[in-house]
Length: 509
Image 1 (cartoon, helix red, strand yellow):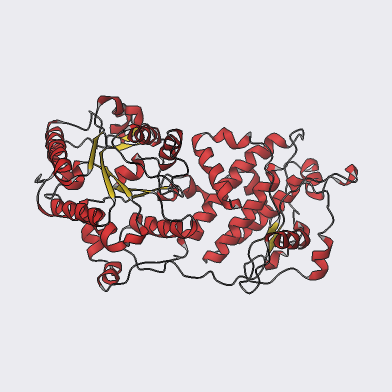
Image 2 (cartoon, rainbow, N blue to C red):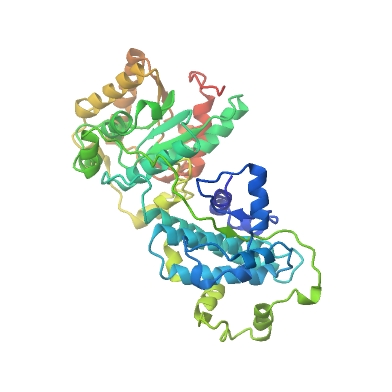
């Protein structure tokens, strides 16, 4: 697992409980080079030896040469890094944090934001390395949490600064992001064993990780599951993604379509599908060109990074560095911090969140996890929810406008059923739960008609239909709003789906 992957997992833990990170034990991180040129591919043992011998210390990092692609450190400096040197983790962390903060002010390209992220990664690692018995430990734990927010933000900026696939937009932000993520997933992990599709109700409502764990308990080990939910996806959009955007080779042998009646109403205005049809990306698709990732990795210059390692102090009197002494002696004044007039940035790092990071704390598509799932911790409370948003009854809900379960959406569903059958893909349709607060007379009538039709079609076409509209899954604390599940409901739904005995789960050979 890569270092960034490790910290992504920690960020997810922070979303569950901000105190988790603060109490994590010291993370043992390896030291090495970020990349090797394609012309030279040494063995694993050789790479480890090279990494150990070419590791620069933070003192050797040139502030004027911290952008990717500006060369490696001179040989004379590399030689000095072979000896274990006792460093003050707190001070080393601050040095990297300053570099990251300074670079973030001017970063524009994907490469520059990647470098910002790498600097924050090192700042986090060094701050986490502050000894447990140090008087600085409590303060350092808070800084770890703060720095990880900066790390997450810089990763988001890097992702926004350039697309790997270089494919034009479908005029759907979620589809663009999910497609790029799925293509990267295919390249990195391989084809999933199970693919979840649907609208935002699927994106937020079925947790692949929880499903994987539940399946493992039943003896289905190491199954890969990806959630390809897309905001606003109707039956037409799902049909388009499965048949036009992706290839049969990119699809697994089991697809779980998790959604509900709104996606099948042909009387509604299908804005997402209309936007896709008018997009430049669709023009490419119509011309027979499908999105794909680059075939080969680009040639990178070798660049090495220093992360904390266990080291026995040779002289405890030298453990304290100039920055620590300066902070101790001047607690209220951080002037003269550096020759680069970085004192204002330094104060920001210690006393208040910087302006550029505030957007990172907002719930958005940036919170989508590596498996495509969007976890939301919000719990629906009608007493407070409708203080922020007006109540809309089913009679005035555009998703139920001119309700009709036939027409174009039914045609799209038939197309999906025929497609999966011809490609020997098992289809499972899951009718996700809704709150009783949402199901007024109009919506409930549509829900009943939809359930009856899907039961009939499942027997006729041979797909599996699972109805999760029972009362046990409609508790308010399982929902983020009246019709979308939160992460707690998504976990229960995943486990409930796995418990269904009618699904022929794949096995990894």
